[in-house]
Image (cartoon, one colour):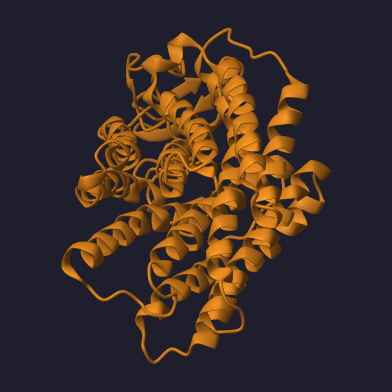
Length: 449
């Protein structure tokens, strides 16, 4: 093989006879040099740079690393995909129930199906996808993949479909739905027990989350009276707690990674107050829901969360949609806690506060996190994809109208709900369309996962 050696410079673009696409480089000369090791290649070979000094070379005509169907390679893939499509379907069906009188599943009763599925369907899918992926990073131990992951997905899917099957007995639906969260815990427990002790909190959170689900099913099956509402409220608080804990880990990390020379100072006392005050609020709402106690704790939570978010702020983040969407999601949580304090003393509706926390805080955070995590774990550059910036704006508009529309124009409540729901559907619809190919295909860098 004749020809000149080519010096590969990652991130520069086209250099001489090499061309870069999707983190792969096609070499048209006979050799390549990575700075220390000469690599002899044939014309047309493809080189994948794992980092700045490690190369993988494939023969001419070998498919690119992005080729292949990998929906169950790692937990984020199927569960982020399902969370995106579920967000669209659940809201579309719920709006049809309200506007057209469409029949909703009777098992959960009244508005119970909508609340339950948004929490234990949509939110549980997003949380499970994140944990099944992040735990591997935290511990260095593999989590479930392949056919076992597909079986876990099948359990989640069955629990979503069964309420629409009139022949499905309630006890079977309850059993399948209640099995999912414990199974997620079983899938991540071996890795968590091999890592740092503070990560074990996620097993506890999954157990309490499953307990909240059991409260809903106990009411639906007639074993208890009035526990469904308490279970759903506990589930809302737990999902918010997940967002606060995960947000506290990833938002500062992502911000420092995206903004050069920006390092956030540590505030361990503040971090402790954030968690302790939120646990106290959740416990008070569950065990002793006294209005003044709830209002006082909610204000403390809002103030500590606000101080936390202020410490993460940097003006350059506003030029990065994939970053500011996470900060805005956290801001919605702060507003939600402030509104919860007002709701406790009767100044606003409790549902206004709940939807600030759920549509604004949880919905925006889930959309932003899934968008960012899916890029990093498929080997892509961390940058907003075309159309996702619009999705980030739409989800925030959905929250804005869902919270402040009914608050200011109470006589037009249904109209604001419909418009907000439509914006939510559009935001997650964009995510589903843009990210489906990404979540189904193999990593572009050829690595497993």
